Image 1 (cartoon, one colour):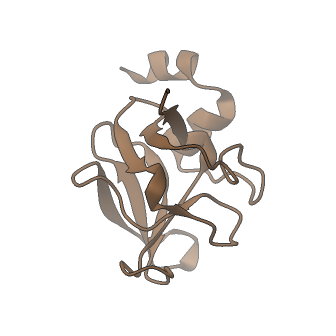
Image 2: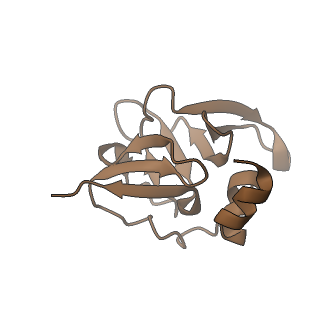
Length: 126
């Protein structure tokens, strides 16, 4: 999918975050308190990224996960805004998802801090 098609598919906020590396406001995302089971996928391309059982409440205001599906994301050095961070991008389409930190409370020690607008939840149907 090219950029013009993505601009038509995504809302302006989704496009700004996914393709221009913006950030949604903390505590504003629709998936922040989501508890249903399923797979979280990239809103731009549909690639499955995170299982719902990897999600936890970090108290930061963004959905957080302690591990990704192997090979689903890439980690990229990010020194913007005077900080040294690691950006998380979709391995399939390169869309910005958020950042990863080494302060997670689970065994992995990781906290993938993601923007809700970057994700679609594919729920498990019964």
